[in-house]
Length: 158
Length: 274
Picture 1 (tube, chains in turn orange, red):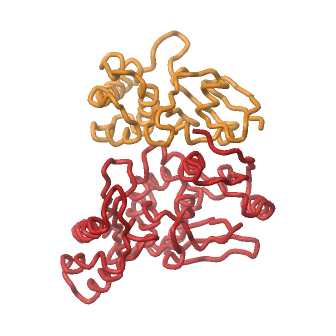
Picture 2 (spheres, helix red, strand yellow):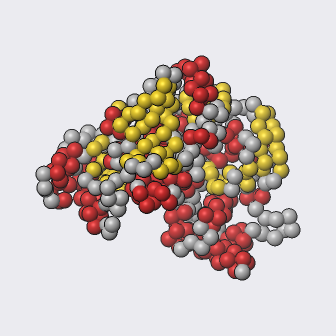
Picture 3 (spheres, rainbow over the protein chains, first blue to last red):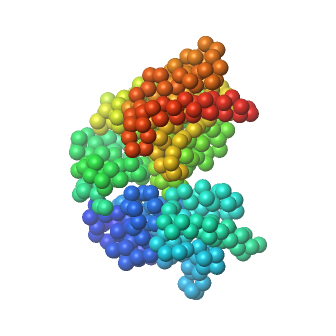
């Protein structure tokens, strides 16, 4: 079937098998490989992307279900100037990663979380990341990165 | 993992969905959020030849105040149920339960109707809707019928929805004391399915994962009705249940959990300020 998705602001039209998962469309058709496949069973969150601005696990969404809609991956977060997105910058300053495999999904989950709740408590961040697993168990710095990003966005808005 | 091959069809209205289901018969399955069906297909536990995507049927996504009850469209996402101001004030047990399903990403996709139609005794919303005495509106070629929760859940992954029919709406009566609720779920990790769970509204008690379907804890309810204390009533939580043993817990442990969680739930519901 033919699908047309807007990925990181760019329209991509492709002929795909009906059973194509969004994560495969992003990696293999759109050639955007920041989005990782982890557990492949909707548990680990490594494949988290934004669908119309909200976090979803792209291993459990069909490309066909995203047809005509907007997808944002990690590659689409930073603006064109080379400046990192506040959440990316916070992962850098707080050392919010170890092996890095979960990082793209963590970043996208936090972007979605902060859109829904711009100044979360630490407990709300931990709750909000219940669908993302870090197998290095580096959660403390990831949570700190989310709180730092929230604080810097609040500052930026003033 | 990639699902087995299928033909993807998209319905833009309930009538179109019913027409496609009639045309393709038992080879077809409805696709809502897909968060139960797609994992089952990836694991080769389900092999539908046709998927009828309901995701674009905007007419089935709503939360409406109907006076004595709230009507929730079957395609309303968990996220929308969780964050509904109407449900937070009038049926907080339902809003809270929706927020307990899966994780934020899953709640952005999964729908209340999909969860209910899937009919898994281990999932959260069916038990809560059973405790709330909800009714389920089902449309088919012959017209529309309404089935009470007590007659809706029939067996393992089996509900009152007949082949080709479509669940369109869930009607939840507003409880007399909305604040008298509790939801208890025992899991090993936050995102896991309940090993055992309990939903309480007033003196209605429903159990998660204590049998082939969500169950009302009738022995507890009748003990409460005849004046038993919470502790004495909760001690009867496993009566009439048929919990299984698996890698997560034995039957005896599940029965123990049911008694403990029912007691905690009744205590919390009674203590919650109006």
